[in-house]
Picture 1 (cartoon, helix red, strand yellow):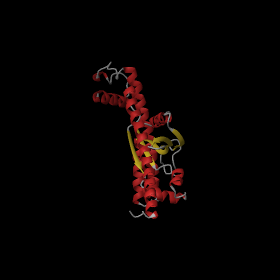
Picture 2 (cartoon, helix red, strand yellow):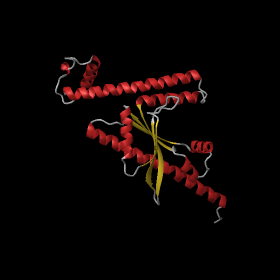
Picture 3 (tube, helix red, strand yellow):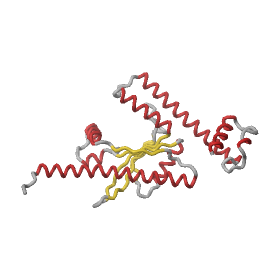
Picture 4 (cartoon, helix red, strand yellow):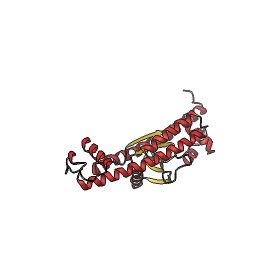
Length: 248
């Protein structure tokens, strides 16, 4: 049997190493997704409510990884990329309210095998373009067949309104190849402020409904739908309570 050329052997080795490299990040996503889904279901079981509305994930393509590594000027080796790039594995958590984003971050931080490497709070301090989100770089153990790999995963936690704005902004930047007209940028910033105001208003209404429900006993079935609206309840809250009651 003829000897395998050294170049082919080296290529096979490199291919195997890169496959394992990518798999480690996929498994890192799987680990964090499992944690979040457990937290979502367990929290809902205990409180009949969950701060997590939706969870999605994405793994950067090899082309995107090499492009970003080259742009950052990092060493084009697997170890160099692993050290410098923190967003190869990404997870996005969507919540209803701003307070929920911090609650989810606390639950992630409380996991014993999760190491929080970095937190960037773009909710309290939005980016100049209006972008809001809570970013966490965490590290989780991935148990491979022959070793334990510590994998970095970027977790973005945001409200539904923030997520809608970010999705639109991404599409606009893609359409204009990042050369977005200044007038459109101004409108995007205003839209971000409007989304922020909506988040504040919706959370305030939610808190008022919860507080009022505790007082009048809506959740416990102590009053009937036709009794809602009697007294001095604000009309907006009457409508919300009635809709909530009918939905049940």
